[in-house]
Length: 121
Image 1 (spheres, one colour):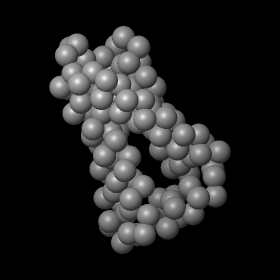
Image 2 (cartoon, helix red, strand yellow):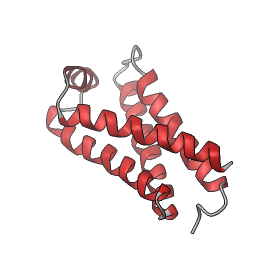
Image 3 (cartoon, one colour):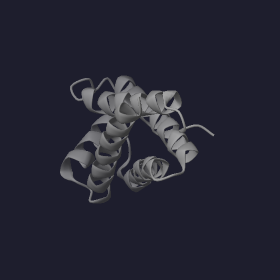
Image 4 (cartoon, one colour):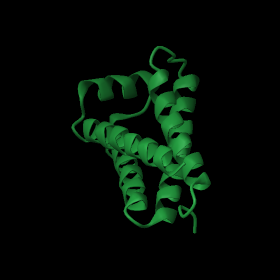
């Protein structure tokens, strides 16, 4: 179980850190997507910071603060539940797979983290 948790957590860290960088750089696809779902561009840095904080928390969890990793995974789950909800509310289905994939990664990290001995407080 520990190996699966480690692999999924690392993938989740890389994915969230990567998209946070794209958000901070205001990549064209980020601006287009946020406009399409009705999220004002001024919110993008805040959303990027939340994703980066989630990735950092997961990394700290792997480096010896397991409870923080679980909290970060839970925070990312909530974040991406909101992102999926925003896409559904805006009826933007063509790229729903992206926030849904991030949600699945965060949820898998959380579930495996809870099931892995030594990852709990």
